[in-house]
Amino acid sequence: MHGTYKPLWLDNNGDLEVIDQRYLPFEKKTRILHTGADVSQAITDMTVRGAGVIGNVAAFGVYLLAREYAGDKTKITEQAQIIRASRPTAVNLMWAVDRMLQVVAQSQHVIADCKAEAIQICDEDVLRTQDIGRIGCDIIEDIMQRKALTSFNILTHCNAGWLGIVDSGSALAPIYEAQRRGIPIHVWVDETRPRNQGASLTAWELLDAGIQHTIIPDNTGGHLMQQGMVDMVITGADRVALNGDAANKIGTYLKALAAKDNDVPFYIALPTNTFDFACQNGVKDISIEMRSEDEVHMMRGVDEHGLPQIIRITPEGTKAANYGFDVTPARLITAFITEAGCITPNKTAISRLK
Ligand code: RUB
Image (cartoon, rainbow, N blue to C red; front, side, top):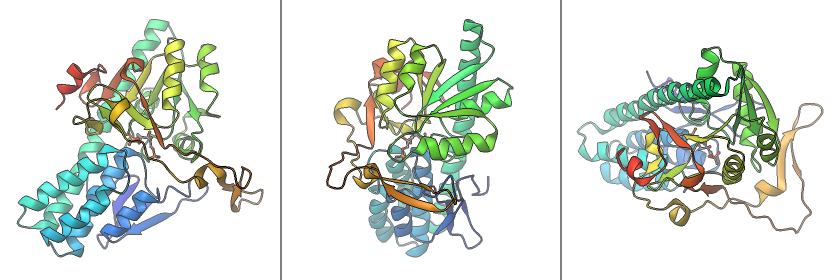
């Protein structure tokens, strides 16, 4: 790898160029991040999003700080805290910044070493997602065999594809692998209100890859599971506690409840750097990001001429609550699909990954 990944890469000036995910699926724009402040801003305003990519971009953010402050360790460490706090839930962000700061502390050649470490973090994620793809797809084949299925229906929520983590995604990695293995697969894509990461990002990725998929309103999954139209649910995660409780995009918990009631296997695919070993109890201890009411009131799309428009869909003066994430209790999760294998959602199994 040479610092070139599908959602982010280093340009010829050594700046970080990222796909600006706010404009997909209608426009493919990129944004160049020159400084640490640019990186914090891009994470906060969701130019880049998804736990893995937030960590990937944050790692390069510390490299940009090293360049900006000519290797001054005190300044880099101080400014890196702003990147570290730019979104609260995805633990990959804190993990990546802390790992980069260890390099800063020990290095004699801070700028070069930071660049190499950021590339190393992304390279490792590339390999992690490939392993997740293989292990997840083995599970798909196993379920198909047991149920004597000739095609397979997966439901996913939000976006945990290559826009979410370099370079194969987490939840979508087994789906891409299934396509490579020639398995006839179809994906139910939750639209994922209010920011529609499913409808705009997952659908865009799957369309681009030529994978059969159907967008469904967020409330449809329970009905489909009841009718036997879902063989497996796979989502990503933003933070998983030691007891196996998993934070992911708001609405994931409801899908897990419906899956349990209908005996549909519910898997969470994640790289091991999404486990938060310091967090004992996810439901009690993971703080949930509250986002702007405007994301609920307003919708972005294109009009009949293909021109971008933002419209309001609620009455002026009505209040909205915008919880970014929810926590699915471990008891509803069949297993975690990680690069280290399939992990049972309990403290004993998760502790072994430390
Ligand atoms: C993203 C989200 C994704 C996880 C996992 O939320 O909930 O499912 O981050 O993604 P947001 P991955 O869009 O608010 O960042 O494992 O691919 O990083």
